Image (tube, rainbow, N blue to C red):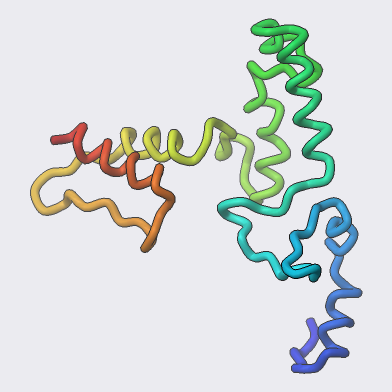
Length: 149
């Protein structure tokens, strides 16, 4: 581990030594006024992989060609996608396969999470969240509060 130095040379050396550097070229990098921007918005909408358009076209083509049969007969069958992604997702987050599930999207998952344990009673009725969650997350919280009366 190196000692931090507040110099341009140190920053360039760190960039050159980055083991993930090669992946940079696999993403579209947004620009503002003709210059690349530093992009830290990974949780809401990360950088678009250059391969995304072709991957999406493959799924749309399978959908057009196969309809509902795409669940089982598409190039990448849709029915068991969560099983196909479990091992790589577990490795990505450093977890065991039985600790990971790939499913739905954030707002649906918040509903599933809350319905599994949120039991408001007495003084324990609050749901804590970040300062400004996505609007759909707020709807999920409000829905759970309404559901429980």
